[in-house]
Image (cartoon, rainbow, N blue to C red; front, side, top):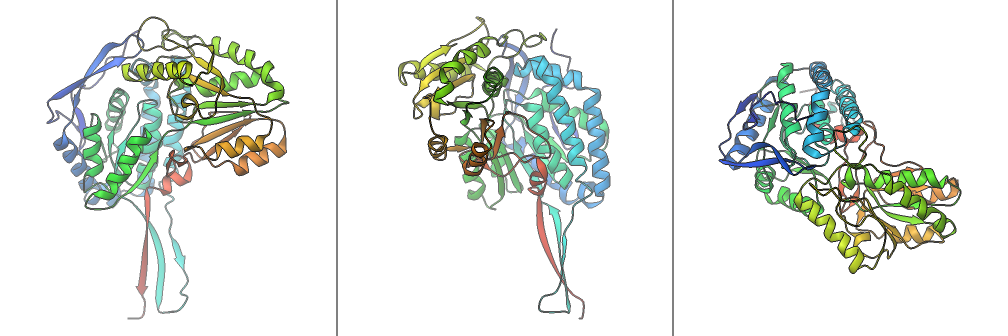
Length: 492
């Protein structure tokens, strides 16, 4: 099995409804992380390329038909046509994603199902943009109402870990709201985004400039964030880069809004009374899915003292049962890390866990398969809650089981002081513990007796260093709209 032949010139970018050769002269190799082999070469854009893409999006928004002539129903139908086009080519997208990201091919049908659901779900919002009529409070000669309008040009900077899924998280609500877009995928994983642009163009439903793609690393992202014609920035990535993005949006000529979805160090709590074997499998899945490259990965685990000794062997069995292997093999359950930098980063954290934090290695603890960027699923036990491996985001298949606890109030108090507040999970049959945990924990999503399931209609996001703004749900759609107030003098 090999990477499908791409139906576009991979040395070009998509701007203003056309495939164009970028001004930037640099190029970058795209790897298959399973083998570390090069599978494509794509261009590195420069600031001039970003400028052209933003100006195309700006012209499409202010002068083009997308918002000035298209009704909400027409935008809805365009998005539904796009979803149908994605569905017709889903097998190709699944293979591209598997080769470019190293995802197990068995994971891809679910991700494509979610992608299709997102575009169809948000298409339903496109013709339901509503304002309010406000009765005159002091002056009966004034007619007062609000209208919702799209924020304008949105610059998106995407992460590498879920290229097609996170693209849908961002692009679907923005299109439904009537925005135009300049999209920069993660530099390691550009191929799905380029293929998406090809499918969008293939529908013939989207005017030129509505969706534009630029490629590259930090310099390209910086040029996009700082461009004066960008009205909103959407970012998914690291805390350090997210803080830089937020500072940049305020340091330019015009302050613009931003939505940033950043890192996490999400805790899980296992209480007495649950099915321990089932819970161990849920915990391992919550941590190790996508090779641990999840912002909301369950990476800090609290186990009640009364069940600790019974639970740990089950956790070891669950972690060691994960099948590693060629991602295109249907039996593979966990893939490699994305690139050499992430591979070295995760191995360094494993060293820190062993040598500096003095945590015990239950299983894993090193490279796997002898090729590419593979790391064994790793579980530390008896980890100090303040240890580096227990407090810093690793973004790899590494779980820290903390020292056993007796009182859930102590766990909540410690976790409320965490730098991150993206997600958490609790496994219990005790309703009072559920009520206390869900009420007192300050984080964006809390799972009870499950983990990692997300839905197009439920908002996702965090607090503190996990970012602000929300993806998914009506909240995401509303984030791409602005409120305009109209005061009409009816007696002039």
